[in-house]
Length: 103
Image (tube, rainbow, N blue to C red; front, side, top):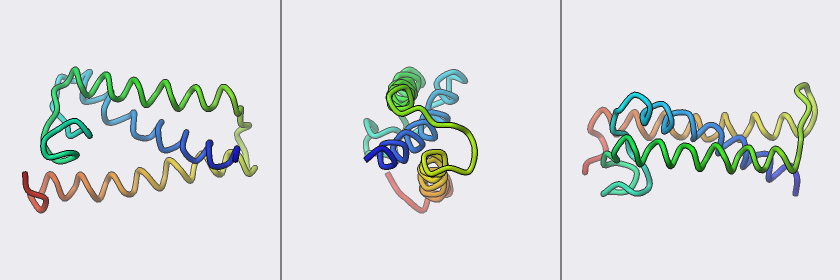
């Protein structure tokens, strides 16, 4: 169960990056609250708050399941979660920016 939580923590921490960054830059970016969901733009404030929530949840999981950096099961699960969500997000938002996914 711990590895599944660490996988989730990696995904949450990865997801926090573009939302917090967009919010701090004052740029709109899609969130689950946009219309259509994940495609339409959300305000910088919504992005900052959504990214902050993802960051806090990811860190809360890590606080309960500390992980040592290195080639161990927990760290690999954390990295796998970040890489998996990062790959999915890069493909999705690439399609959003290119107009393949319509509003």
